[in-house]
Each structure stands twice: as C-alpha cells, then as structure tokens.
Amino acid sequence: QVQLVESGGGLVQAGGSRRLSCAASGPTFSSYPMGWFRQAPGKEREFVAAISWNGGMTDYADSVKGRFTISRGNAKNTVYLQMNNLRPEDTAVYFCAADSRVGSANPSVNPRTYNAWGQGTQVTVSS
Image (cartoon, rainbow, N blue to C red; front, side, top):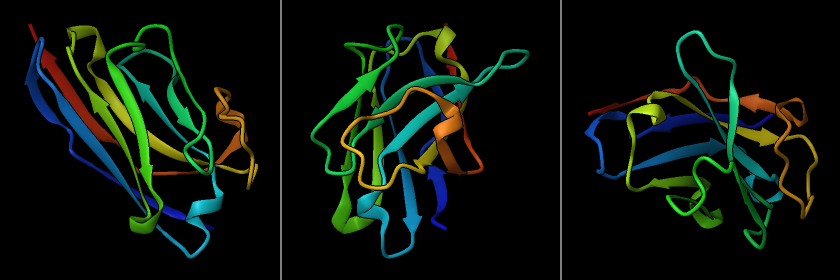
C-alpha cells in the first residue's frame, strides 16, 4: 500500500499563497488517482481537490475553485496543491490521499474511495 507524507503547511497571511506537497512511496504511485482533503477544528473532513492517475482530469470543491490548483509529478512520486489568495476559512489540517480505484480517469470527491492517507499538514491563514 502506498504511504503518503505531506509537507508545506504553515502560517500565512490572508491573500497569500502556499504550496503543499505530498510525497508517496511505492512503485505504483502513478496508477493512483489522488486527492486533497481538509479538516478544520470541530468540522468534518471535506473534499478540496482531486486528480486522475495521469493528471488529465481534475476536480475542485466550489470553495477553492479558481484559487487552488492540484497537480502531480509522477516521476517524483509527488502530488501538489498550490493555494493562492488564501482566506482565514481555509485554515485546516490538509491531508493527501490515494484513491483505491487504481487506474481510474475520474477523480473522486468521496473520501470513502480513498484507502491511504497521510498524517496531515496544518495550514493557518491569519486575517
């Protein structure tokens, strides 16, 4: 099973940018659709963005469309989340996850389809 480690979190001012990275171990990373989710204190984990195994399709939560971009570098076994124009409501722990539907061209917004999760990285946006 693929193992995931997120990095890049931290404190940023509102309107600023941050890029999260998720490094994956395992030889079959390029076959997995990948996703980013986040969880704020007292709230349920929510979908942020997802990308197909080959990067050809992406999907975003309405709240981040136009501000966040998901991408992947299969040669580096890494998936990224570029976050621009950050808002205080983006404050959360961000998790990357690997989709169990190996080889799927359709990104999933459903956390139940993901069977491997990183430990999360905290992003705090100050106003």
